[in-house]
Image (cartoon, rainbow over all chains, first blue to last red; front, side, top):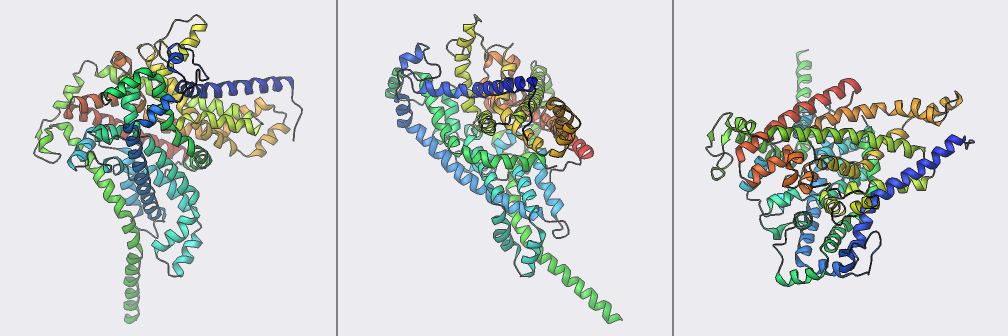
Length: 294
Length: 314
């Protein structure tokens, strides 16, 4: 029902749109600027001519990045890590959330288990004991050091078990009477009706694995085993060019360092950009599920 | 008579057996997860005993280490910069908590006034994009745009005749730069959380307010804000638990020795002491103290949240 607006309301509306628009632009400008840098010629970048639009357009920084073996190796490790890691995460979330979503009447030990899992959210051993453990288990320099320590994601388990609880109990009872085992009920009833939640959690885990860098940095002794973000960390943030060969360094001298870094960051962000529409769709419902429900 | 009770006891036992058999798969489902958290969460908890040892890595986590009592903790508190680090942690974390409360609430209220769905959705999409990128990428971008010699921020400021500011290299700027950039990364996400809370307010309340002659402003003040107060206070209470988390990912990637004075936090100190200088005992001691304080804070905030709002996580 559109009502007539007073002058004050109209004025507020104009300012509101202008302000929100301005903030959104400020949020996006850094990315636009980095993209412009990564597509500009060395002399233009060095001369400070590049702002929001590429000057003397060139794809050379991207060629350079995409031809670097180290970049692709790190990219491959991240893909491997994200795939294995997410699979393990999601499988465990489903397997753990299902028993914990049962009522105490049908699963006596429920609260004991809940506390065992929940306690790990409250207290942890900290950096050094974790590091020494990984070392003593012989997991250093293996993909398992990146995948196993974070395999059980308690926060996601809580999201999932709340979702499982909304499945009507009658479905469960009916399956039980028909002689279905818990295992069968889980995969044939609970999982199919919970696909939106599972999708949310899959995306959470995928983004988490894609973006992690610290475990790669400390658990991989050889830089050859670095996943993408750890690799980027050493070159973008730390300015470490030790791993570079002489010909690479020569070629880099003709390019602008800022363009190359920009190009690497953009390429590393592309996968997130690709899943972003899905993220957007599912995360909103995921967030609601997790935080507003009290 | 006797026969009857015997029979009943018999079916009782059968019921017990049936129940156990019925529950067995549930235990089995939990088994892999349990094994993993025992190894990767509970063993490190036992590993905090390193804090009370003169830890020699060769002997291993459960080898015969020499116990030194509270020596490591005394050593830590005798360090000249320890209180500075504690202060930095609290200062940056508290500023972040406050900013990350007010900015998103303001934005949620303003966005809620927008009637044009396309504009609303576009704005939302843009402002919560940075949330999904890592601090490596965002850090790389920040280092570039904030550079005093050729960053766009400083060339923009230069248009107004402002001298270049070294946002990441000066102690007077560094903590504020951390807070501002953290808000940049997360406010969009939090705005969506608050917007979700606003949309769950009963629309009839607005109609009633409108009938009573309340304008948009009064409706916001008397309906929207009170409707949000539960979630606001709840998130405030829960944020209490993160008072010692000033943001390792961000600070580690943006700081440098010249801003240690204002930017070194507990987590970055633990990293440098423990992994770079191999001072396992003292840095575990610092980590343990942090975990203990966090544990108390998180437990307290959950208790308050439960008492006041009947909030339960599971």
